Image 1 (cartoon, rainbow, N blue to C red):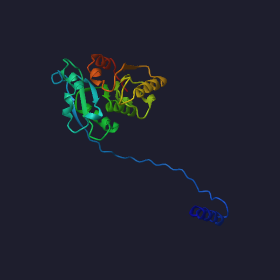
Image 2: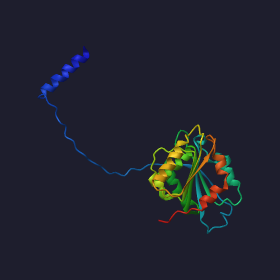
Image 3: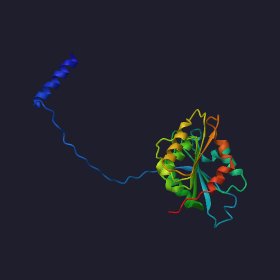
Image 4: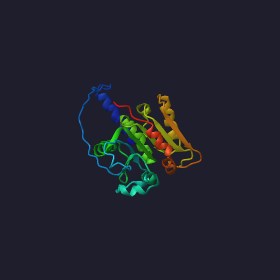
Amino acid sequence: MLRERWVLTGACALLLLGGGIVSAEIKTDSFERTITKSVHAKYAVILPEGYDSQIEKRWPMILFLHGSGERGDDPSQLLNMKPLQYMRQTKGFPFVVVVPRCPGGEQWDPDTLNVLVDEALAKYRIDEDRVYLTGYSMGGTGTWTFAMAHPERFAAIAPVCGRVINVLAYKIKDIPIWCFHGDKDDVVNFSFSTEMVAKLKNAGAKDVEFTIYPGARHGIWDETYSNPKLYEWMLGHKRESK
């Protein structure tokens, strides 16, 4: 009964309007404003052997993004991770390595990372045409996301078992990319990488490598980052000066 009375009331209302439907006036508009955003990051830096003595040299830089399990407050705690131990302990490792720590409950934010790169370039003697981006798991996702937001920053990127949240393959088609994933990954589906690599090639990307670990699950980063070929590959690429 209640529904029937409502329908009748609506019908009466239409009759009061002359039995027709009144068309609303539609307008379009736009605006432009500048907004500001406060960002904050804690990070550790690994300096290469000879950094203090070779004061005229500009060094290549790696921005290293950890996974979700390493989120926290103190970046120095990250330095005992096996990938960073390799970078710290390999004699002659030629990179400045910048290691931010993502706060608990958060994800990698491209705006914060972009300011962090500016900060590192201002504080350390870095060759800004040799800035490399890499990360695993959540850090692999951050690698894809940051690179698509600011492709002009990087000489090359190496995402490891990361999700691709917003596919903008055309934005990074000119960046050398080396992607890594285990085909039995039970945390981040292997298809994220296979589909992204396919989209990159469809967008015209010419320099894309894809390493598949047969039978491997999610934890492939120790093996990936202890392979010297990755760092040789990075050093083989330099950003074209703008």
